[in-house]
Length: 446
Image 1 (tube, rainbow, N blue to C red):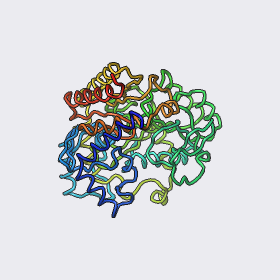
Image 2 (cartoon, rainbow, N blue to C red):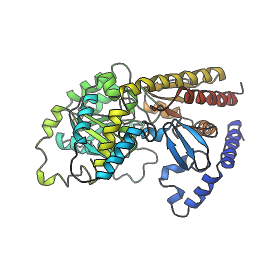
Image 3 (cartoon, rainbow, N blue to C red):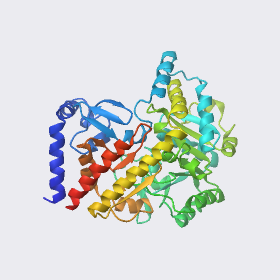
Image 4 (cartoon, helix red, strand yellow):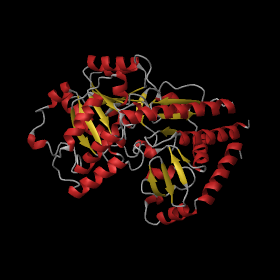
């Protein structure tokens, strides 16, 4: 057994010993839940079974065994506001007493759409329940508008569970990503895939003249943080306009860059903006907005008789409860003042990890995007998704995650990313710094 395997076995034994109630609940769950979890991907949590949560507030939660954790995962962005922000809770309580879902608009929709316009620049908004839906609906409308069939995504992107985005490049050929369950068609029929930061590759694929929309994260976030190189976004915008393709920017994770996400922080000019996860404080909600020019082209292009059967929208979309939660969250929680605290906390987290890496003499690095940061197990910063994927180390990821979990810290699972909330404190960050340092020194033998 390798040294890392021995350390992993030790941490798994410690986890099982200190989480008897979660272990018992996991055993019971196997009787009624498929593979013992309410969502299949929860099987992947390191430790053999997931922690069962009892309650959460702010940047901390307590599990059923009474253990308190500093939460840097924050529902993988869904709880970026912190758990149960007071303003959002009050708005939800008040609205629930007046009606949860009605299939009719409320005044909150006007306020939220106006605020999103102020933050992101695009001026015609619609609402959904998830960013997946926002992206799916945007793709449908882009195809409808352009009369083109294909989309472009960047290799190892993340846009929820949109079928067309589960594609990758294998020696330059588009195919399904590993683990793509039941793809309806060969992704090459629907999707062109380009490496992030590859301007020449992007131009080559757009030159075919069949791309309705380029759906892009402004920085990759789910395969490791990959920043755009200088000039990349200018080229992306110029090339999409030149070739008659729309540009959609998915801000669901990159809202970490500021109140207007990466778009607002870097003055991007997308045709479409999509966002979900944190904008309603954890209540299912999402939005997608069009530029004035695109909205003008769409207006009147859909027959009134078809608006309810066109594959866009849903019975619960734009429900009154979600809109009330969005108004409170955008108005009182994810504010300029909050980001002015959260981003320096991420800088502090990054500096702490850098110090730990250096002290342990490890060939790792740490990178940051707004109030989000993570460490990767290699010395070189990847410039695209393929490089980030190749640099991954599943065994180290699981070990470092479980080591932190056993010491009261929850990081984003499957790759060790940290997100700051308005409720996160310097003490929380410093706790992680010390735990990371201990783990790194033990691994290196320093």
